Length: 58
Image (cartoon, rainbow, N blue to C red):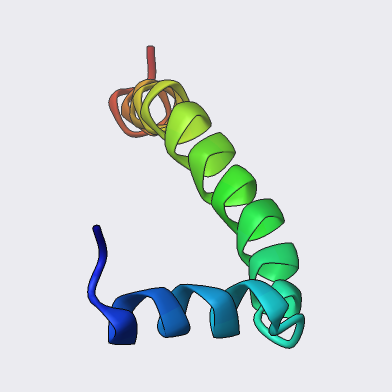
């Protein structure tokens, strides 16, 4: 069985809807960060190749 203080904390957090706004902003933010991370490696490689061709004259 849970201690009384843990149970009361869980019940307060469950009833509190103010924290929901933070989650609503964090989820799209996390998705954007994941998308940038997924695209950045191929983009960086392509960008390096493009600049390499420009500076070497190939």
